[in-house]
Image 1 (cartoon, one colour):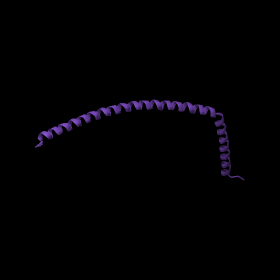
Image 2 (cartoon, rainbow, N blue to C red):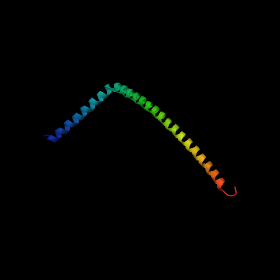
Image 3 (cartoon, helix red, strand yellow):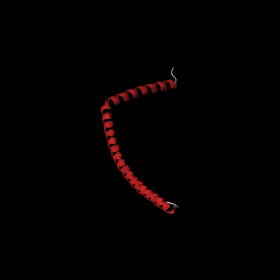
Image 4 (cartoon, one colour):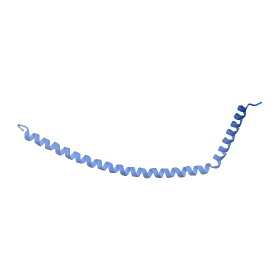
Amino acid sequence: MRTNGESKLSFLLIGLGLGAIAGLMAALLARKETREKLLEQGSRNFDYLNQQGKKLRESVGGVIEKGKEVMSRRCCSVEATTEDGKQAYQEEAPGM
């Protein structure tokens, strides 16, 4: 005589087996469609990433240009300040 636990286990195993068989059959039938969907979605994602990359390159290019401008202004002001300092030192230094 079987107990209630043994019959539940056998039903579970049968259900798992049938589910696995059904899953394999569905995968074999839909394999081509799945590949097509994956390729289509991958293509869309690739295009989206390319667009975002272009936007990023453009914005980074603008930031780099602004940084160059700021650095050139600072370099010029540092050079001017250095020259002013040298000139003031030469005027104040005794014996020069």
